[in-house]
Image 1 (cartoon, rainbow, N blue to C red):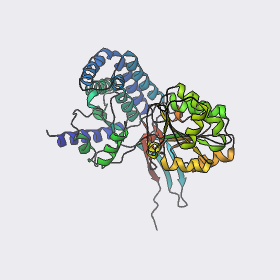
Image 2 (image 1 turned 135 degrees about the vertical axis):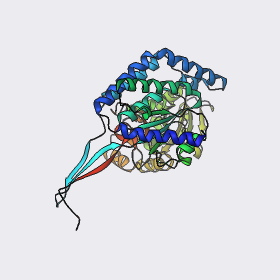
Image 3 (image 1 turned 120 degrees about the horizontal axis):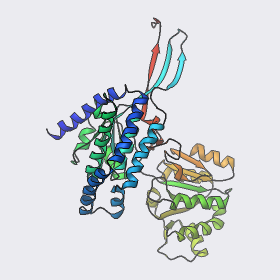
Image 4 (image 1 turned 45 degrees about the vertical axis):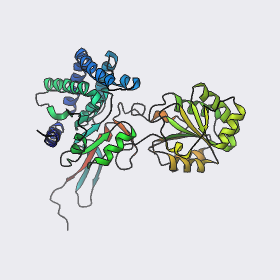
Length: 428
């Protein structure tokens, strides 16, 4: 069987499974998820053995220490995967909800009902725990899923998926075994072939760095839900509580710099720059963050603080477009809330942006005019996360404008259909 035939078979099986999966009751889905959680724990030693092969492969192929850490599965992480499945089982079923209901003048009753999307392809890197997370969210929302992890995690991903499938089959006689599938080859050509099969695949969700997501979006013929990068901002307004601004800015940058909702650019109103920048600058430098600043910010910081050139550099325009994912921060002084909004809408990535202010007029203007998936008033950008939003779990974050936007949980993995209930109505 060649690669095209292999991917076509995978997609056909997923489409057939999605039809069967849509028929399962909430109780049946939850029973399967709980059994899958228990099976992951019971098979922890076997999963760790498969993961050891992946760790060995990763080390041989020069994966960084950080990437190897993401790849590693230990008892704690396997327990975390199992806990995640139980949490998904406890969430409300997103399928079958009445989203809208109306009766037309001719008596025709219309209902808008949430439904599964169908077949979802998820492409991701390194972390094998994503296999369990993504599969469980798709399963609960009635979607068949095809998982394509990194080549470095293939053994782990295959075994995790098979463990879940086996548990489902033991729990339910009519469990659709192709509801969860892992692409079994590391051949890169598998992805464009799979994403060309529009008659079987309904949606693709890539998770990873910008280069991966762009490569997927460029080759896909099916819809792709994505965010390319997280260039997030905090704007300290003229009327900000500066102590609050200090705490928010520090949290947004250094609590976890490598994630997509971490701040990359700090904007400060010129009326508070002289007072605020030395204070936040000192705190930021204590955390070993390099600052790339505009001329005025650099002048203020260098005159008030003893900083070497290695930690305070001139900002280049390209820096404002950059997601560092590291201990690097852009700083810019702006003239008022409109200038901050203009900067964010031009340089930002429509991910997460925040204003710190006591001025309600300024805050409402910022909230209304910043064109991002999540916009905050007096809060850190670090809250853009499915768990923090009370969704229970997250399959990704979208900065698209069509379909899902922001953190994506179970409800964002559904579509809808209209039901028309009549008693013989015909259109004149």
